[in-house]
Image 1: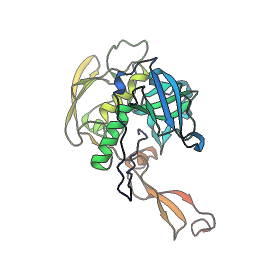
Image 2: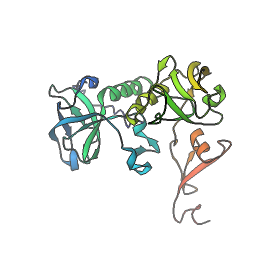
Image 3: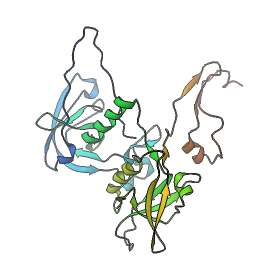
Image 4: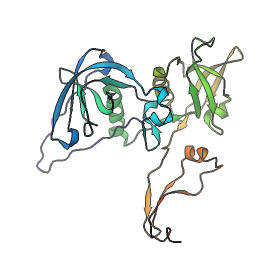
Length: 283
C-alpha cells in the first residue's frame, strides 16, 4: 500500500556498503531545492535538479477511479501523500532517492504526471524498518469506508462514515453508515479535504491488532462511544501460485476479495490465468 520493498545487498568479497542517510521529510517546504538521482531510460546514472512545489500531493478526484495509482489492486494513494517536485524523472527513476542539498534522503521517487512525485522519506523509512524487523507489514482493519465531510455540512470536525462491511470489527462494534467519527483511540479525526484522508487511513491501519480500541461517533446529534477490536488486514490479492499440471495460475481468496465478489465464505481459489493449449485451456 506504500510501494516500498527492501533489498539486501551481499558481497562475496566482504565489501561494506556505505548507506545514505535520511533527512526529516516533515521539515521540507515549498520552494526547497532538491535533487533526483536514478537510472532513467536504463542510463547508468543521472542527477536532476528541481524545487518542491507541493508537500501533500494526491491524485485529483477528477481523474476518477482510472486515475488512481494501484499496485496489486491496492490504492497506494490511500496512505501516501507524495512530495511534488519538478526535477525530471522518467521510467527507471522509480526507487531512486530525492535528496536535499545536504545529500539527505527526503523522498523516494515514484510517479510522474507532468509533475514528479516522491514517497515522503519519513514514511518510506518507517515501512522499511518494519519490514527489516518483522519481514512484513502488519496493518489493522476496521471494515469501514469513509469520506470527507460535506462541503456545506454543519460538522466542523470528524470524518463521515459512508459504509460498514458486514462481519467486520466496525459492524460488530455497532457503527453504522452516516455516523460521524470524531475520535479513534483517543486521537481526534478531521477530514474536510481529500489531502487529509491519508492521515486518517494511516491512523486506522496502525491500531493495535486484537486489542480493544474506543471510537467516538456522532449519531443523531449525540456522541456515543463504541468499542472495536481491530483485526489484521490481509493482502487484497494473495500471492499467485502456478499449477503446471493444470496449466493455470491461481490465488487464494482474501476476505476483502470474497466480499467484493459477494461470497459468503473464502472457500475455493481464484483462477487468474489459463495457459492456452494447456489441460485447463483445452478442456
